[in-house]
Image (cartoon, rainbow, N blue to C red; front, side, top):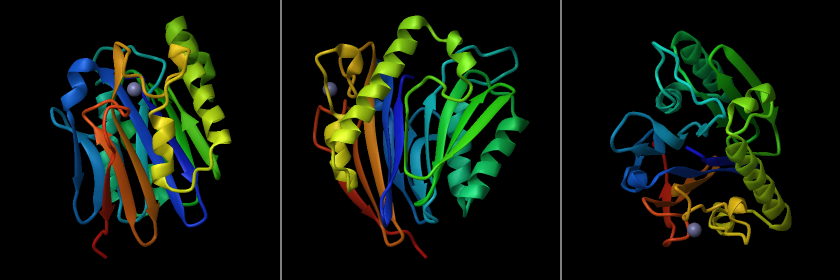
Length: 250
Ligand SMILES: [Zn+2]
């Protein structure tokens, strides 16, 4: 519920990642799945994926936004990840992915709010979504997000002050680590996603928090292949990331 996501463009590939933060009881609820058309991390107890890439090189990740109220007759935040999975199953291009995501979102009553990244190897769309408010921004180099909004920033006032502070501090720390690093491949991100600081709210791996990091995944995707690095059902620092090479059917 306090996740961190990001996208980085490289010369021939892109990197897409997520640290999923949730309650401790959600430590055993992540499953990495792949088939001929997509690879993603799903929940065992509900529909939807929280990070994934499809055979057309389209990627999706999500992080909860600052507004956390579910109005009557609206579904909860998890519906965003169901849309993400549908988009990965159906979209062949980034524009298609963005349009399909927004079309489904507008046709359903979904409460709370989300930061969604949809990407291909050249660009990433940030979608900030909260009830009837939608804003989007296109990035061509890199983008990182925690939970506060950048575009719909007036809605950050819906966040508890401490949560807003942590979201901003964690994002700033990640950006600092990124600037100091030489990230070329997916595996290079692991040291950032497992990072602990002296100041607790700067932690990228939040294994000590009540809302803790319960899983981490990086997709490194090019035209030829996709590599996934994942450490799910543990905090990122608590074990070795598994590497999986995915060749989609053509
Ligand atoms: Zn840790």
